[in-house]
Length: 313
Length: 298
Image (cartoon, rainbow over all chains, first blue to last red; front, top):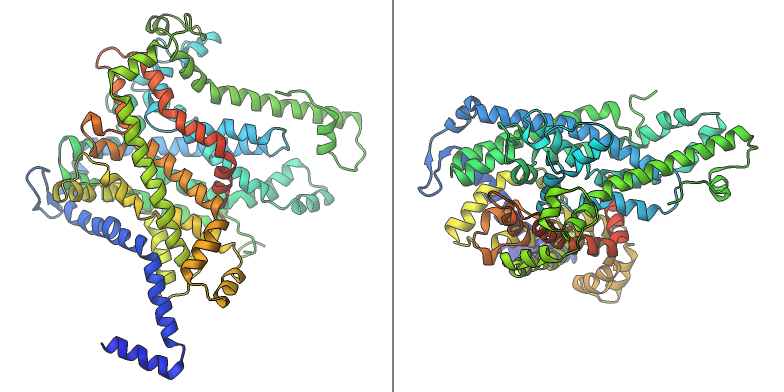
């Protein structure tokens, strides 16, 4: 009542008040699908997840509060350490490879080549088709005895490794496979490269800069925001790797590809330890946040934004 | 593909400067290297696809005994065995329902919210927008278990598509962000003129913004379709019975416990990738523009 009364008073006083109030209400109304979704499917579950992680919760029996026991147990669980190791190695090797190879392909495509849209489609297509079918395909390609990879290697006289069944090679095999999807980053690089004003290059040419000087002084700094964006996206994606490990190696051999998400999945849906798995999810979240924050923190050193001359002579 | 260099290339690459013979030769060599690398890469990128499709027309014996690329004899047995050994038709139906519903819902809800975040002026707008962006940082794993318990233990929606559809259907921050960025590029004079003529917000949204935003809406729809079609973890944990499975989960059942029927597996894999590849081919321009739009210049 008082709200309505105040609205009326404002309306009388200013003549515009009710319009603002109506606009506010309207804004909420238009944004409400997402706001409702956020409360039910994001905010609620987040709070619940904190509680879950503090319970012992065998799915079929229900939760009992046990404080930070799950987190204590996490640090003594050897499989957790193994899965963190696997996930970390995978990320730290595959992300830089993706960043560099994607960039190189984008540079190639930016050389005024003919048939650009065709090349783009060819390189990008593998990035669109992720998932189970692709995992199966690669499982077969990397098969030690009758796979395409070792057959191709044998043509040039190399006796290929046993890839997926050799604990020393299985993770490398998954990294090689992930490189097939390098086209995603390439597209974004290419959009960035095409956005660099040609006037910059022309000015540098007038000053007598050669190809490499232009590359280091113009291309790299101008592309650093793109690199930054892809690095963050890459970290978030790589740390959540699941499908490949689940389908292709199922974590093996000898836990050599036991990704963190796979271990989480097993705890939750095979061992039905919901509380423990929820704690694992928070550990993964913390890990992603720490890495992302480090990247953000370091960005002032290496990411160049136009119009930002701070700390640059 | 052209690995040689034509005068036109040189003209394109050149300027008004006088070039001597050495420069011309070096440029020609450079072009050859560029195209040579592009072709080699293209072969590497397409080879797995080609291998998969060809294998789907082979016999199991040929797959296991030789590396001949071309099927000998050609046979559609793999497709027939694959299609009849599991209810592939119902996998496809379920996938279409999942992807189709999310696609339609996401276009509507995300555009409504994006409209609120870009064309309306209201208190709290920036707060909610920043909040929406920051939820993109929350890994789905944190939400996975509480949602699972909520949907299966409390609502008893186990083995239905609802737990998969609903959370996405109300709009995803990434799609909202993408649409908002696009809406912001449309001149505000359009809204002002329409309001002068007495148009309501709904009128502006429906008659002005949506028609102009078709490319962005198509991009969002594509993203949603491809994501849901490929989605594996969600369907894996919610769908249990054969008749409810999506193609992504159903496909994994083609792997046998001891021997795998490779032609059938590759045939069904080919089939499952077909919609994505087809759609991508026809919409690649829109898709690529959308990717560029999401980039960086926020």
